[in-house]
Length: 167
Image (cartoon, rainbow, N blue to C red; front, side):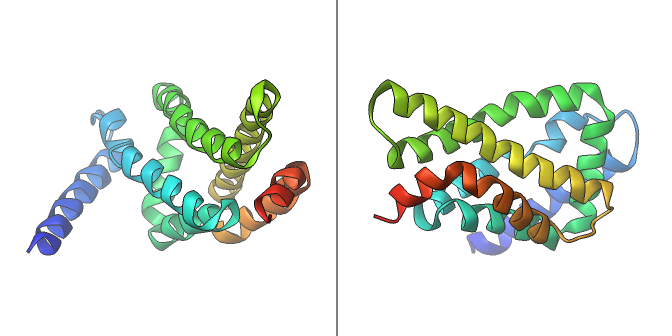
């Protein structure tokens, strides 16, 4: 019974977001980031179970499934400075998740903490870079391809992490 109710609730949220993204003057900040907590939790769970590449690809596939919605959403965020600023604030949640992930697999102590922060920043930059290319290309190439390309560039910087993760 919760399934259909949850689906209706999600559909209502999506419709409200679509209306806000389509027209000016809507309370865009609340609606543009209404699912932020769910996305962060989902990414954290995927990181724990599957590691960075699969977590990134799962997020990319999620966004690609509803491509038009996400492209409009990202376009609006990029066009409005208050939304860009809010997204930058919310990105701290992603950084915390990535940092915790890298710290689990990295060196102990202060140096390990510093490296985890650097790796987290690189990971987020790769993800956001892929999203910008996706937006600029109006959905082409597909986001999972762009994420794979970003990971291919990023992975040498994370080689030590990858080696530790495979033990």
